[in-house]
Length: 89
Image (spheres, one colour):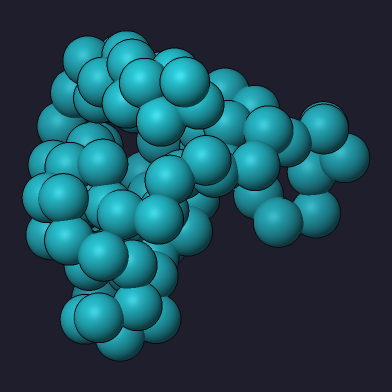
């Protein structure tokens, strides 16, 4: 059981591109008021879930949206960048 826990923990930490909280890399702040996956306003479903992926802070309305992101991060990062660019105009 302990070995399974360690393997799952290491697997979660190994998720490519997600930075640890103590990483010193500059982070681009999240530019939207909504979850870019669901469109829900952040904070309406509780505290947003925050991760940093390839130097970009990302916020999700819930753990399910974070799981969707983790399934195809490159695709969803592009979607976030497009939504952020549109919101900046």
